[in-house]
Length: 225
Image 1 (cartoon, helix red, strand yellow):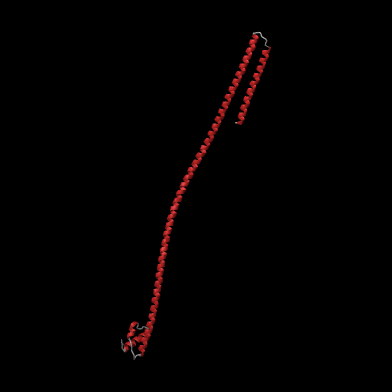
Image 2 (image 1 turned 120 degrees about the vertical axis):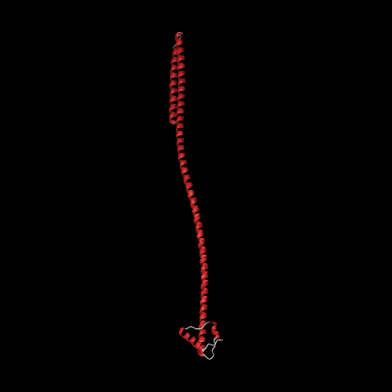
């Protein structure tokens, strides 16, 4: 136990009254003055104030601890937010890379499509040119076939006409020879002259009939063509 002198007690009480500064802590348990009511009241006041100070410190400590817990939670949340943000950044970078790859593939496909379109246009032009050449070749072939048909028809008609003329001339010559021979021999020429006239008439009629038939066939063939 500590027993301060009267002057010390008076100074402690005076400091408390003037500046409201008291003794604190466990040291208060060491003071005990039985015959000094004023100092005992001072000690009780100091104990009361010390308890209040302790409560305040405890409250402040709890508040600090709560704030520290909240701060720790905020730090954890902030760390989680930073992690999520980093994941989002990574996803954005991956999406950007994927977009760049898709964009590059799209540009390549577009380039290939343009090249294919150009080749297709060239092939279409070539096909049109080939079609034009084929039509020209077809027209030339048809013209050549037409000329060949006309040539063959002309040659056939010429051959038929020649044969018909040869037959007519041959029959005419033979009939005329027979008629002349009959005159030379002094025979009766009435019958042979009638036969000779009839034969020439028939030959001429047949000749005109053949020529007309040939011309009709030629005209019908030209109209059909």
